[in-house]
Amino acid sequence: MVIRIRGRALPHGEHVDLYADGDRWTTDPVPNAELVAEGWLLPGLVDAHTHPGAEAVGDPLDDVMLREHLRQHVDAGVAVIRAPGLAGEPPPWFGVDPDTPRAWHAGPWLAQHGQFFDGWGRRADHAELPAIAAAQAARTGWAKVIGDWRSNGEPVPLDVLTAVVRAVHAVGGRVAVHTQQAAGGEVAVLAGVDSVEHGMLLDPDLLTRMASQGTALTPTLAVMRRSRPEVSARPDSPARRWYLRGADAHPSLVAAAAEAGVRVLAGTDSLPHGRIIDEVRALADAGLRPHDALAAASWDARAYLGLPGLEPGAPADAVVYAEDPRSDLDQLAHPIAVVLRGRPVRVTRTA
Ligand SMILES: [Zn+2]
Image 1 (cartoon, protein in one colour):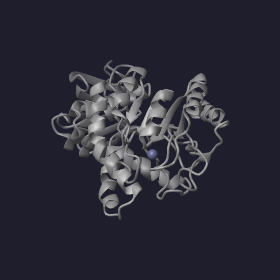
Image 2 (tube, protein in one colour):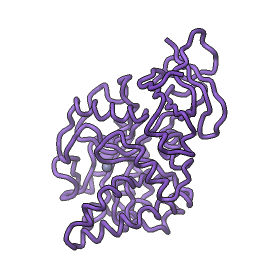
Image 3 (tube, protein in one colour):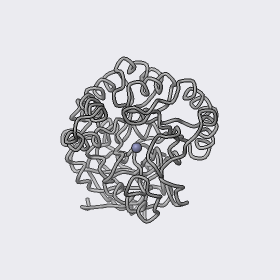
Image 4 (tube, protein in one colour):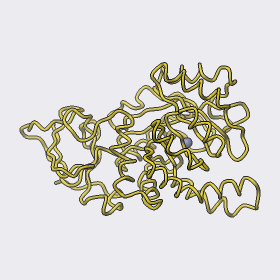
């Protein structure tokens, strides 16, 4: 059965009337199509930084848990995820099962010896890192490198990360880099990585360069905001001071990034899954216009991953709200319908 949605489509707000021809939107009317929802239409939400499939840090990937986490994402209106690091090899249905989001992933995190969480990721010598990253990107399109670690884990040297970027780009892939130190952030930007993950304590003077070379920022604001009280309650230490300094500076850094024209992506990083709304709210609280906070979690993130928006020929994903979510972000908690690959996977109220 063919489904139909209509209403005003973001980002521009024009009236559209769309039919799902399999997994493609079309404006050609289909007789007897079922109108599943009418309202404000977004081309599906995107969580650009999530690690589904494991409950605790270091745990192996669990297929049942993976499916449950992805269901939580879909229920929140997420039609696309990017997993910059997974706890194991995903099952063949990952990213293609009709009830789960489209997915990009970077395989295991790639880290220097002595860094990152025990049990997760792959450690590599500097000399072998470019080839390992390129092989990963050739398989899945992305490689994820732990660029620095916590308060005092030495950053990957600039010449090494530059070689990683060159090797990955040579196979048509992209590089995402975790950084939470000023020094590691500088290395990531100077190496020309495709996306900076977290970007805590990044020097704001680097934002113009990020914008001009097309390096995106996934700030994971909400998870940092959520961790802050717990870190703050710890006894004083260099690590505590480092985290609080970074967390407190992060909202204004993100606002400055958006102002400088850096592409900002919404990512939730940590449990619970299906909380993209928290990141959109955090981006708006940091000072992004609601329009731009939504873009980071929808049409602009899709464009970054090569997916068009609500237009003929585009993949048939959508999330429908009763009111314009730009004037009320709480709408994100109550989608009328979530359409994934041309199928209504969640409908709470028929049109
Ligand atoms: Zn992460």
